[in-house]
Image 1 (cartoon, rainbow, N blue to C red):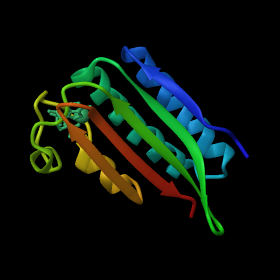
Image 2: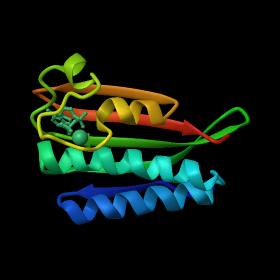
Image 3: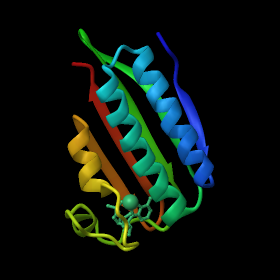
Length: 133
Ligand SMILES: Nc1ncnc2c1ncn2[C@@H]1O[C@H](COP(=O)(O)OP(=O)(O)O)[C@@H](O)[C@H]1O
Ligand SMILES: [Mg+2]
């Protein structure tokens, strides 16, 4: 099975790299092209947030398996300032940057599992999973 990759996120160009790695791994795992695109989109959204709000972080992309199911897990983590108000950040249309992107609520809709841990001491970690159809 394909292995996991970690993409350090420090600048805009890294967003593109993370996005490509996600798409590659998804298609290697046999995701249909539309779902590979959704995974890539979710990754670029999370990576962009790292660049924008935390400056530095990393994106870990790995295959996951549960019984017969094969999926992909993405962990986006940084040691930045954390999200001040998580329930506000998870509301559709909330943005502190005038972002035109999907935002966190959009990412949540694209995937099967979404887990967000964020505080001022340890930064932000978003874990998402999507299973193959
Ligand atoms: N990695 C992060 N570190 C700190 N704050 C974050 C991070 N990701 C998101 N946020 C905060 O959560 C808000 C919502 O994020 P998001 O839904 O992606 O919208 P947008 O990026 O368009 O503002 C952001 O405006 C920002 O304040
Ligand atoms: Mg954003």
